[in-house]
Image (cartoon, rainbow, N blue to C red):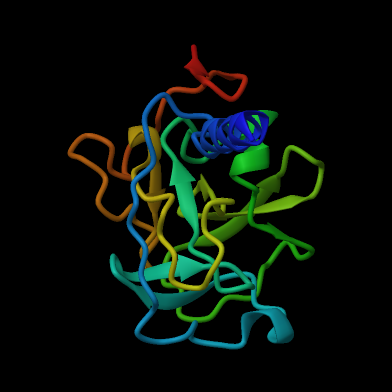
Length: 185
C-alpha cells in the first residue's frame, strides 16, 4: 500500500516538473471555456491561425483551436526559434506546410521561419508562435504568463497581458535552453 502511494506521488512530481517546461517560475492556472468557437473550422479548412474568445479576450489559435503563445526569449524578426530541446517538447511550434499560411481573423503580419525540426514555423509580426502542452481544450489559456516568459497573442499580433517592458515592439535577448529547468544565457 505504501509503495503504491509512493509511486503515485512520484508520478505526480514528475508530471509537475514536466509542466514547468523551460521556465524558472510556475504556471498560471488561467483556463476558460471559450464564449465562441474559433472563427473557422480550422483543422478541416487548412487554416493555420484563427481567433477565438477566451478569458483573456480574443486570442490567436492554431488549426486545432488551441491558444497560441509567444516566448520572450525569442527575438522579433529572427530566422530561428530560441525554444528547442525540452522547451520545444512543452511548447510545440505552430507549423504549416505553406510559406503563406492560411489565416482567418488575424490582422497581424503572418510569416514563417525554419522550425527546430526543419519544418515551417508560423510567425506573427516577426514572433515565432507556439502552443502549450498544458492546454488540452479549446479555450484553455494555462500557458499565459508561465515563468513570466510566455504570452497569448491577440489578433493584431500583440502579446496579451505582458508586463511593461516586454511588449511585442522590441526584440528579446536570445540564448540557449538549459534543459527543462530554466533558461540560461
